[in-house]
Length: 462
Image (cartoon, rainbow, N blue to C red; front, side, top):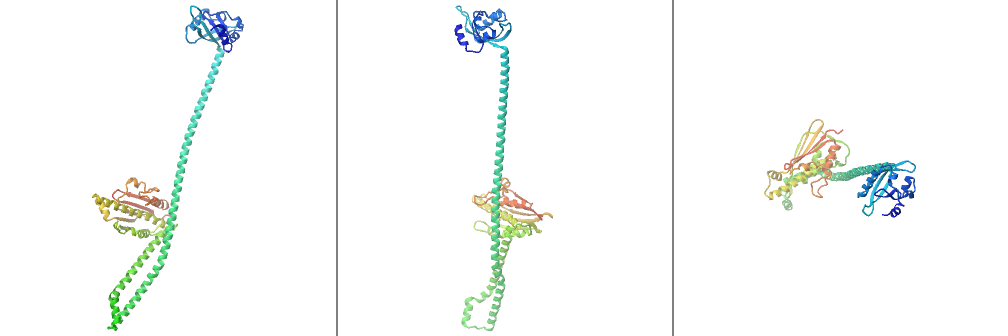
């Protein structure tokens, strides 16, 4: 680079630049350098660098030699002697532009920087760096805060979602319970109505049976007297006596009236059980005989206890102890008896099916044979103390494993096939015993040895 090319290049640059030879001769400068020295550029051309610095000529030459022999920029320090006699310490950066050769001297470009300004700029740079670091830290903190806020929001959303799901589940359960309660209430009203309608004509028939029987006996006595008085009746009467088989009619008519009386009494018992069970719509606490509620429930379920071509008869063993009247919600308590007894019958029917399957495969155990031949439900009542009574309902079915037993009272849990159960029977029973009567409902079962449900309720709920 020639001095002229350097001047063209350096003229537009604001930084102080010098082009010097390897011996220290000033070949070209730009205006910022002249301003630093307080001279004009024409006054600097051709002069030696030693004239304007306080360092010795030897030190300056060593520095220039280092610049001319290095492939990188060499940092140094030069103290300028200004035209007004003051000095200015500068940091210098030297780089070789034209290396030394036998034909020509080395050309070195020097960049000068006021150390005070550089220090100030360095401080300013440090401040800017500190501000930038603080800004980075603030942004990092803001990001962390935003991340934490997002996490908290996600947690809140999840909690709110769970709460809404629980609320929805409770609403669905409440709706199902209301529907179930409405069904049971409607069933109670219908049963009460049917029982009332049946009771009226049955009572009329039962009341007239006695008179009809008495009238018939009077007529038979009259016939006997006629036979005694008229020992040889006309042929027409003898033929009629033979046709109606009068002797058999006299013997059988008494049996006929007796069977009619038994039948009407049976109907009256069924009606009484229906009316007793129809307390489902009663909402008040009452003192009732628990045994009557159990017997009424068994009466309604009697058709399922009888033998069929698929299942043998289910025997019900009652072990009733003397109990006081219990203050309770009788209709709801009957509903509990109904649910538990119906489940026991279902369990014995399933056991019967499994027992037959095992018999086909020649793997029938003694317990299965006993269950197949003698399925039974045992109902036991007893008084614990002056405050509590228990009702135990046990079957000799296949039993329930521990995992299923732990979920029996959960809503919508059922082991029955689709369409066979809603999973609400035992849940509602648990609510009735525990929440409504402040009692206890427990299940005890060993697989292969049946299941037992124990109801414990206070004698007085007041």
